[in-house]
Length: 297
Image 1 (tube, helix red, strand yellow):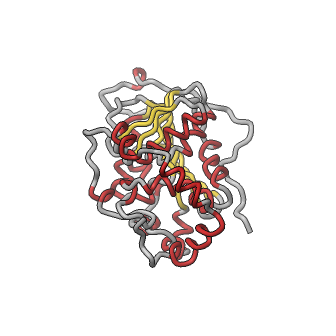
Image 2 (cartoon, rainbow, N blue to C red):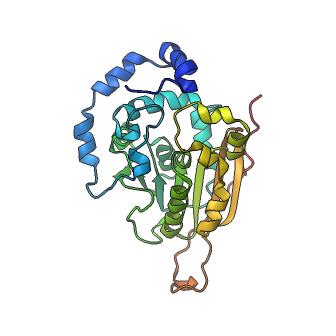
Image 3 (tube, rainbow, N blue to C red):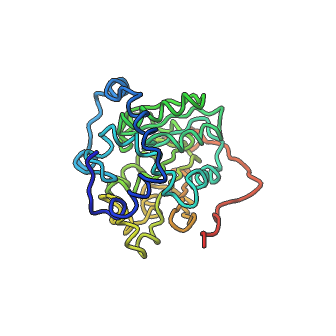
């Protein structure tokens, strides 16, 4: 695997992962157990054009980024250790903030499907669809869903232009996606999310804490993340508001993460009257976890 040697991860953390935290033999067996090219060809949508920002950069030190079959092999074993305090807790924070009762869910930039699986478990009767630009990541996601016995549709698609009809989802989510896109792409993805949601539908975004990243520059240097500094300097709240979302709110989540939420309001002065637009119903949770948990000491 071709990687940069000058990132903090490669200089200081990689030896720890390789020698103590990751079972190298298990990774090797997983890699060899799948015909990645055959399976990715099966899932590849030939009409998808890879954006320059995506195919011209390395991500996480892997040459070719997510268009390299090495990406899904190493993604889960590393991610479970780099999302403090715990990957499941971090991703569950997104689930806990959902207030709609979704019939159709769209998970954008799903990667290996970790959040998608939690969404389907939380809403077993909802139709769950997940999209990603990497067919290799989709291979891993599909395998995880099958092992878990979960009915999830994985599609090769660009989150900027998914091709789904207007107002066809009640919930749109994105986990750990925006720090890996240029700001203008993140804005386009939120514009697309607004188009896809029914009135009253929710968008929820889990990602790095922009305030913490701005104040602690070394956090932006751990991995090879080409766009993370631009992400840190921006504001998910502003992107959501510009896209048209209302009741926009971002909560700190375990200091280094944040979860942003917005609602699609009734849009006035459009060709589609409010009375003809489909609305969604809401959960009424007993406990409100919107403030998150305190950061670890």
